[in-house]
Each structure stands twice: as C-alpha cells, then as structure tokens.
Image (tube, rainbow, N blue to C red):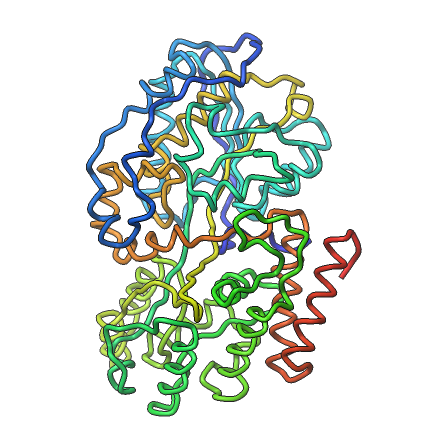
Amino acid sequence: MTNTPGFERDTTRPLHARVISGAVAAATALSLVASTTAAYAQAVDLSKWSPEYVKSIAGTKDFDAAKDCGAVVPNDYKGRVSYWYTGPFEADPKIAHEMDKAFWEAFRVAYPNIETDVQSITYNELLDKFRTALLGNAAPMVLRLQILGGVEFAAKGYLQPLKPEDVGYTAQDFWPGALKSVTYEGVTYGLPTNNETMALIWNAKVFKDAGLDPESPPKTWDDLVAYSKQITEKLGIPGYGLVAKQNAGNTPFRFMPVMWAYGGGALDEASASPTYKDVWINKEGSKKALQAAYQMYAVDKSAPTSALTNTQGENQAPFIAGKLGMMIAHPAEYAKMNDLASKATGSDKAVADEVVANMRYGLLPTGPDGKRAVVFGGSNIHVVKPEYVEGGKSDEQAVKALICFWDSPEWSTKLAWVGSNPGNVNGFLTSAMKQRLETIKFLDVTTSMLPNGIPFPVIPQAPEIMNIIVPDMLQNALTGTMTVDQAVEDAAQKVQNIVAGGGL
C-alpha cells in the first residue's frame, strides 16, 4: 500500500503508550445533540486573511476550555475514553512534549472522573495497527489520523458520523477546506484538529545576483518559470527546486498547487462542491501546469537534473550552499537551514550563514487568473463505531468531552505548536498563537496560505492517484517518454479506471 497523502512528512519514531488512570466508567448512552460552546467565529474574518491580519488578531481573546466544554459534557461526568494518536516522540522539540503533557493534565483537571486510556503511536505504524485492531474488534473509541487517513475507514463503514455541532462547535469554527477533508459522500465523519500549508522560499541574494528584486517573489507560476530561467542563465545554478520523485508524497504536495492554480486538478477536488467523479487531470489547466514543469526541466534546464529522483530533502543541501534559488516547504525549513548552518565549518559556514540571513518566505504564486492554491495538510479526529471498539462499547459522552477539549481554541493551538496551525480558527485569537508567531519565524506567511488550501480528493483511491499517477505523469513528460498531451491523457485514463474500481 502506498503512503497516504495528507501528511507531508513521514518520520519513523519509537512507539510508546501512556495510560492516565481515573475513575472506572459506567456505560452511558449518548445523545449526538450538543450545546454549542460559544459563538466564536464572528471574531475571525477569513476574507481578511493575510500575514498582517493574522498577527493583528493574535492574543486578542481568551478561552476557557474546561468551562466551554463543560457546557457540552458536564465536568463531573463519570466515564472512560480510549484514544490513539501520533504524539511527540524523542526527536520532537521539548515544547511539543510539554504541550502534550499539559493537555492531559488539563483534561484530567477539567474531567477528573473520566478515565483516559491513551496510546501514542508512530506515523508509520498507526494505520496498520488500526486496521488490525478493527479486524479484531479491538479499536479505540477515538482516533486522530493524518488528514485523509480516515476516508479509507469511512468508506468501509468503520467510523461514526461526526459534525462540529456534535461536540459544541459550528462549521464556521473550521476552515472550509478542512471540513472538505472529512466529508465523504455527503457525510461528515470527523473534525480537523490542526491544519498546515506551505509557502514559497527564496534566496534574496541569489535573486539580487541574478538581476531580480530580492524582496519580490514571482507573482504567478509563469513568473516563477521565467525567474527560474533567469537565475540559471545568470548564475549557472538551478532556479527552482522541482520535485518529481515517483511514489513520494513530496511530489504531489509541490505539483498539485501549480495544477490547481492553472485551473486543473486530478479530479474536481478544487471545485466548490467536488464530486470526486469528474476527471480534470487532462483539462487545459492541468496541461499548462505540466508544460511549466517541462519547460523548466527539459527546455530551460533551470531545475535540478536530479529532480526525477528528488524529494524536498535533496533541495536542502544546494539551498544552504547558495546553489538553489527557490523551493516550496513548511515554516520548519527555516529551522532546518539554521541547523545545517550551525554544523557547517570553514568557508561553508560563511556561505550557510549568508543563506540563512537571505532566506525569505512568500505566498505561493498564482495562476494566470490570480487563483492561488496549496495542499491542505494536517490531521483529523474520528469516532469509531462501538461494534469495532474493544469491549464492544463506546462511552459517547466521554468521547465528546475529549474531542471538544482537543479541538478547543486553546488546545488546538498549543498542540499544533511546532509546525502546524489550530484546526479551530478561533485559536488564532489566543495568546498562544501570538507567542507562536513571535517565536516561529515565517509562520505568519505559511499560515496566510490556509484560505487557499485544497485537500486531496476525499476518496479511498487518493493515495494511488497522488503518489503514483501524478508523479508518473510528471516523469513521462519530463523524460520525453510522452508529450505533455499524451502524459495527461494517459493519466486521465488511469484516474478514470481507478475511480471506477479498476486497477492502474
């Protein structure tokens, strides 16, 4: 099975489990009709979203998760909840561990009579462990997965319907793109817990040396192609870090924003109301996006020759050496460059320090008509149907209390501290968000891409489409095995076949 798209990173980390004891629960029937915690969303205007707006609203409102969620599930409720997720592990920053610990301590104070059985499982192990547990009716009541990890299980009938209103929130408390990622065949089966997007990164010194404005990134993807060519012609280095490796999540994360901006797509995932049945990969916009990649790689030769086997990891060394002009990545890339610079020695150290000083972040370019797009990443939280839960029972009130608390403005912000953003948009109002913006450089820029976020198609076949068909299409065109027109038509036939239930 291919990697599931939706979480761009794929880091292996050791498994550990934690059980927080409390009172033993009595079985209790639940109502899915919940009181709303508060009418928060009117304080956040998504139409104004920009780096300046994000900074202006941070720290303007305080929230009390215990009180707000207590209006949904009484704080003296006695019960039990089991939960699996990918929490912080040894390689994660200290603050990630601190926030995770603080969450469970705060939940225990807010709900002292809810026993919590919690397992933190590595990203690489979680899906397979969950599949095995389902077969043995030994799954947890609640599960958090990468953004499209849940669609496989929703399609097979393992997950309960779950709407924002079920745990005290409204649809306006979440990004529209994020809610798309948990809507399968018209049914909402989960809630976003954290959301992330990427941005364009460039070296201002490279721009200046190539005769470009060092503080002005390309406005359109056509401009980016032209900038990349100019950098290569003037300096003899790759202008843009094209990524085209087969069966690698990095590839669609960097190519699909181009395709969407030009008006294309794999299916109709970029439309306001996608059906995921209409094939767009051979539309004119998709062809233009593929042509842009072909132009940089095969004609202008302004992308690395190793792009066919590159992931984003292979862009890091040339960028820190001042030998790459532009690339796409998360805000964490800045910390990575600082880390690489700290390990450099001699003349390499001087170059690396100069690169870090000249590192800039900007919004991804637009298409010809001004449309901007980016892959919507992150995680979602789901509720397992009782018949698949260990013991055959699910304490729905305890489940609601946990989800409400996790998705509160306060905790969805703190738990996303290191490299993501709160799933609840009201988290952007918190003092925690203000602190994050002050301590995580360029977070405001990547955060500003959220309104342009588009999730990959919310269908079980998304991994095959995004990790195999899209990269194969790129490879066919870039290597000259097929023309651009032939490559998109070949891909369209494969997408059509797989959506119809056939193979590649």
